[in-house]
Length: 295
Image 1 (cartoon, rainbow, N blue to C red):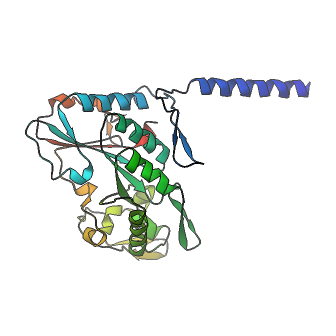
Image 2: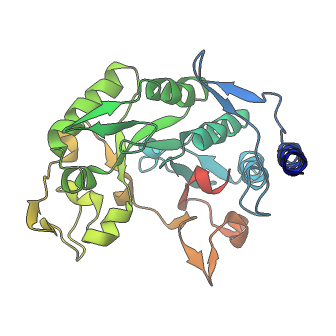
Image 3: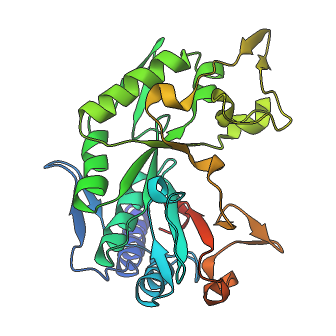
């Protein structure tokens, strides 16, 4: 009797897993994306939300590409680009903890010849991890970034979690940043921009990672020092120019800023909430998305 019950349970689990596999969508000719000989990204997706899915995202890309109303630029070109007859749009993506979703986004942007900016998070598991008092990188991260930059034509930026690095992980942030940028640039990743990461620790200890930069204004939290337990950390600070950065994303001047981390009347922002056709030519728009929310 027990064996029969166990057998039925195995059958049920098998049927359940088959059902889940059949729901996965493969709308692209490339069912997988090769990162290295040993690392591939499954290019399929589930539609778990009628709005936040890759179909919605790709339809928006198609609209931007074919409407004739928009001039789409990377973040590094945003401030210097002007137009009298088009809306200037810069799409920005914070990879956060999901680089696979970012690869799927870049793949789809490349189809429409759209060039955007992807910010790699140096404290994410795909990037590396703290070991004892140091930091060990994931050897595959460069291959991921080269796929996005070289194969799909997108800009890579540095997603700054440096104050977190200093306060939570107790790793000196200035020395770390210098080493990581050298590593990335020496391996062909052309980083000229940065933007700050909204780590959960920011809300615990009341800081912005942008406080690492002298250029970023004091906006009311612990701008100079942070208390953690019995320790007080003087925030390490430096200037953007000392690291070859041309811009900090949070300081770019824009007429409209939209992001999927904001909520409008209790609902997460999405592109269906805005009639982009009504934005006048010459205006500048930044759209910040988090690929993990759409995959």
